[in-house]
Length: 293
Image (cartoon, rainbow, N blue to C red):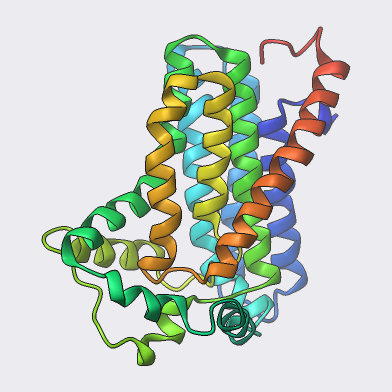
């Protein structure tokens, strides 16, 4: 039964299956549907294989615990570029721009030009990029300490947060202020040394995914912070300033509207509330047979 699997595996299988169903249902509108269907089926097959063979050797276990979840998140995110706009072509940026303006009586990305300077831009662009390393760093730390149960909960909640954010992109696509408000910005976002190379790299890797709402950067970073507070308090205090800068950078670096960040905070709360309830139920129903999965 699906729900007897490790929660991280179950949520991955469910989400990939959902994307597969969406691709099949909207196949006439999606140009690369055959490639997408092949990718999703391949990921499902690999997931089921790893569940079966994970304990055969150390490499397969590492692949199961770390390499596949990371790869899966990246591949699924990249695939959204071939899905979102064709499934839901109505971007909600006009609404998000309006909501931000109602809150601040101006556009926050334009307002932040008052404090803009190259050094700050470099620091905040680095903070924004730390999003890619925070979950991995925390997971590796738990594995090194042999805290397997905490690791399993961590992988599940982080994956659950990623997948909920991806679902948000499909339901409420938005490209973000760096595109919609560029004509209103009076200053280019320039750093001293590293901001622009990082921006160019992220633009190549991410492209235009309509992934502004909700802010996945905010949601995932806060979920990691929550887990660090629970399981590695010293690491929490190390992560706290980084995550704070990361959240501020989402608006400063023009990737997100403020309402995206607010929605990201809401997504964190939803992830923890639903995720912890499900995980507690899974532990109670599978504590004997699956305790150390």
